[in-house]
Image 1 (tube, one colour):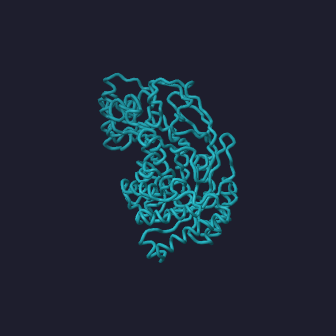
Image 2 (cartoon, rainbow, N blue to C red):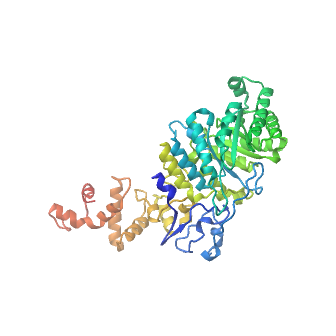
Image 3 (tube, rainbow, N blue to C red):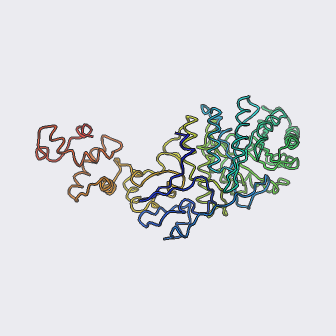
Length: 504
């Protein structure tokens, strides 16, 4: 399954037509990239908060020609503009640390290639010093994916390896990723009092020296792109963070990040921390500030967005939010939140993620890790674009934007309108009539009332009513009559619920 996801073109379905769009062309999220070739159809137009189409009314396809943009030049410490947010994906490092989520080397390589299709700016692909297999896997990804340049756009991902503030870690990282066109290292050190006391057993001064000297050592090996990460930054003293980040920047760091490693911060608290560090750290305006949030209290996405609103311009995320304990901020949630609301509520921030690749990437990661998402998982869950309530179904059938702020196509979901309607005990007459019509049954009001009454009876015995069940409700009178040796009149036109399952 996953291998087919890597090779098949992205299919963007619409009601009444299907458009094949070349996969992998990045578009700035403020552009209506998912509707570039879609003909305007008033009856089926899905108005999404992610697209200016909602404000354009009857804009035709000729007004929305796709433009292939060159990927902006990657400068480690500088963004193409003040609103650009880099996406640093750590699925293959922090995500793989999820209990039970270990990947084989071929699986990591395939996911790395899919992350490139997704157009992540940076992918953190492993911890080279941890084992020989991990070292070789990181090296393979650096040599392959790290050199695969998209000819149309110039895109090539940055390949990053993680290291502790130890010379042997840093050397192993360099030897593994130096083959990539854009190698990067993330050096992390603990900065909270509890970590420094019990993990490192070092003083604040010693930790600052260790961090600064590690950055210098990485630069001496050949790294141009060096990130210093503060582990457990969410529980660290603000003044100390300013000092260690300032000294690391002075030593040559191009990116700095403060991690809420244990997921303890609340959005206002984390946003305030980022604002304080942005205002009080020497040299902070000359580097990229990154945020890394865990989900122990269920607010990793909110904390990440709070960090962006406070001035962070790199988000560290994982596909499906996998990671240690309760996981990390999910890439799909952060990216789509910025895409939908960044222009209007966050001063125009945006990413260059190709959101049409989100579902394919999510499914690949689920399949390879065995970590499957719950049906109501935002963006990629099975229920995201499915409706069972009669009130919701009625609205969806009239105009999808009544209850969907995203269209399925926005995230690469192939779904027809009928597949979005799930018939169950909460469904209304309108949804049943519409589905019967799609199945070829034009019914008068009397017959529809009869079928709907028996439909409601059937929902007391089955959670989901299938198309075969509906067909049976329409046609099984004669079939059941023949099974019982009776006429339709003798059964008074009603079929016992117990016999419907024997017919379908």
